[in-house]
Image 1 (cartoon, helix red, strand yellow):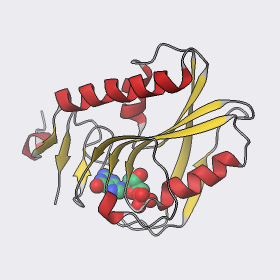
Image 2 (cartoon, rainbow, N blue to C red):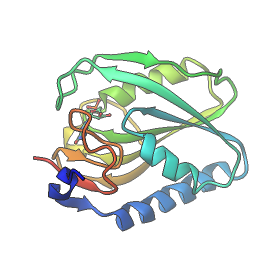
Image 3 (tube, rainbow, N blue to C red):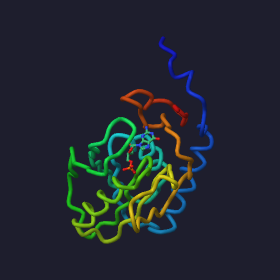
Length: 176
Ligand code: 5GP
């Protein structure tokens, strides 16, 4: 069996991530109570976080994915974003929680928020498991639920890739 995953140093352990996902779910529950929400995950990186988060929530949830791709290279975002896969249902009058794996420059989140707001949801909140505050370039960006503020290092695992590798790593590791 290939064992390349074993060489990735742990930055955030499975237990730390699990506890944080529970915390974020509690914050979302405090905000929306028993009202229905639509969780929108941006592909591909958020699929693991969204899967775990959805299983900690007890209100009715709808799940949507939005495919977005940045025109940057492997490790740098250019800020120009294109939608590669659209939502399957309208958002008007829906409570929306946008689920992001990581906010780096914030340019992707900024674009996605504008894109979703144009669909007139009732309320929209943003959750990001990881936030590289020092790298933030987007202005006036609010992340309502932040898991971990992390330094400007390249991380993989728990959905995050490097050239499509390591998404299945159960923890978050560094690849500097
Ligand atoms: P932003 O637009 O905020 O600069 O970053 C958007 C995207 O860049 C993220 O959704 C993610 O795909 C990628 N990205 C930024 N930092 C990292 C990182 O440390 N690791 C990985 N795997 N992707 C990252």
